[in-house]
Image 1 (cartoon, helix red, strand yellow):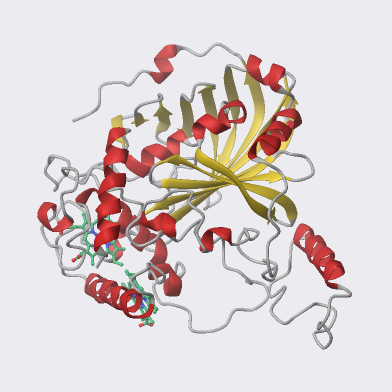
Image 2 (cartoon, helix red, strand yellow):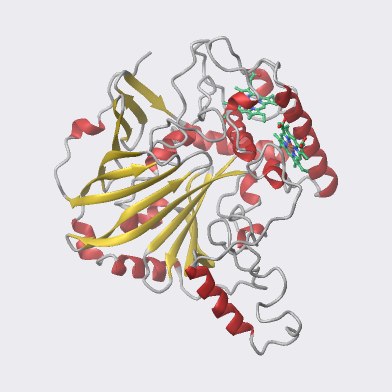
Length: 465
Ligand code: HEC
Ligand code: HEC
């Protein structure tokens, strides 16, 4: 299914991922909650899987470069895919169709991912083959068409055109600005005051494209044709494609300096060693719970979520990540570990260049109509991030995170808002985190800098075996 060069790149990136200790372990494939609209999932715990399955025997992790067909039991199409890439590739498939693993797989105590009873699994194999054929025959083997191209989060792709939707006030203002800029330009007559057909047409550009088609083949942050796409406002209401996005005048350093100034300056920030935040988290199914976040500037992060069954904690100690539940501890790896770690951002403003490889000033964009400048960098070998800073205020508004899989990129988005001063540093009091199967909005009523944090909070308890 996957071209040979791409496989080789996978092996390289898989080795790097292993080296930094974030390898996806195959015997514990990340399992998002079943069904397209997971409910009962604790807020602030995106994409976490249920406890490990009784039916699955603990197994050695795949060796670097070991193929899926060698490691798994029943692989007919993705034979050459490195085995450690299979779990995240499955997440990509589930995300593309907006379904849980059980849409195709027999899960539960009697289940097994190798079993073939479900019709959609059979269809998915045919689709994998179809996608390979399209890419081979039409696009010279480049990964241009994937499951998302048609499915877009639906198991039955939509065959109808989409209707326009209202813009947000910010988008409307941006549209007015664009229209004003176009005034006087040649050849616009006949399109009316709104510019060419299709300009503000609701779903103009679907959510941000991957930062780089090349990226899918293992080169994070490398400018690729698609990497230069303008960043559209979230979801609907995107502006029509500007002919050529102007290259940003500001350098990475200028953007970061302005950001640091905006939130209180180098001196004030350098004082901030820890942060404790209390507030609420509201999930996609609008359940709200109490949360407590403890964080160190060095990247340690702990969130305690009050649930019906007691407190659930997600912790990243700089090396390992785990979820502590009232009935035990579960280790978290791969993307799920990265998902916990990426919320630690107290240290981000002063360490942006250490945190992201190949950081570059990529283009201008917008977040809900607010003009932004976009920096692109790579926080890990398999991940590319776009950071959008408000061009007027300098504040960080959005991080869009793309994790590579064999079929395309899994997208996540973190939005920061409600910036307020705490001990001389401006801190976002609202953080919205969206993955493919969860949305969590954290609202903090209390943010404290430099409160002492007990080291034991970041000490890993004995894992349950
Ligand atoms: C749309 C259908 C579909 C969904 C959803 C899906 N899978 Fe799969 N899965 C497949 C297909 C098809 C194969 C076999 C691929 C092949 O033959 O090359 C497979 C194979 C697997 C295997 C290898 C099993 C073996 O031993 O042969 C695992 C493990 C797996 N999937 C895990 C998952 C997980 C975890 C999820 C949820 C994140 C998931 N899958 C979601 C279609 C799906
Ligand atoms: C060129 C467009 C296109 C692409 C690309 C595509 N699909 Fe499909 N897919 C379809 C259409 C059309 C259907 C049939 C929907 C129907 O029957 O109404 C479908 C149906 C399916 C179904 C059956 C859904 C159900 O409800 O039973 C599965 C599973 C599926 N696709 C998986 C995939 C996977 C996995 C990929 C990526 C490897 C993929 N598709 C890529 C167009 C596409």
